[in-house]
Image: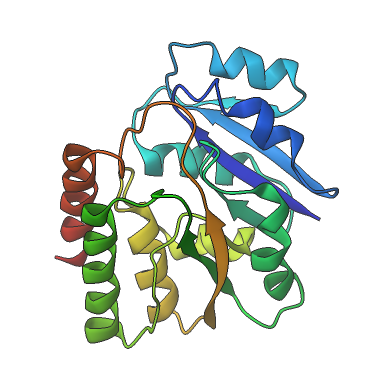
Length: 213
């Protein structure tokens, strides 16, 4: 039904939980982006399709997974345990039914999962999207679904943290029907590399600002 692209950098702690909750018909593609904790080997043993992308960068991992995917519908999701894979049909079903071309999961945080500095940065980016492109989104969420071939045709160039924002901007410019649905957002498992730290959030904002520029 759908391929699920899971960018991974040292997510060994969360992998069994994430892969164990993958819905029927959703095939996980774990893209190991240079892990040093054996994440790739564990994903392979757990039955996921493993792709190795040595070039560091969230967008580089997403692109490697997208080019490796074969299903018509592809999903993207963080693999740190903050998202429940059982909610994937909520974002993928409207795409599979051709009601929308791109669906994003708007995060409903639980238990302090989304620090204030990260929420503020996300709100600013969502506001900028509304101002520049007229796209009314609450969240530039990392859980999303679209058609594989159409995504490849968009020509997304960023290979860092600007990837999610560039996807939305290019999709809007191409006249895509874009929607969002609410999904749960839980405290991640293991050490946070982006939204859980101020430095990581600033790095992501810098990459997204370059896309906006």
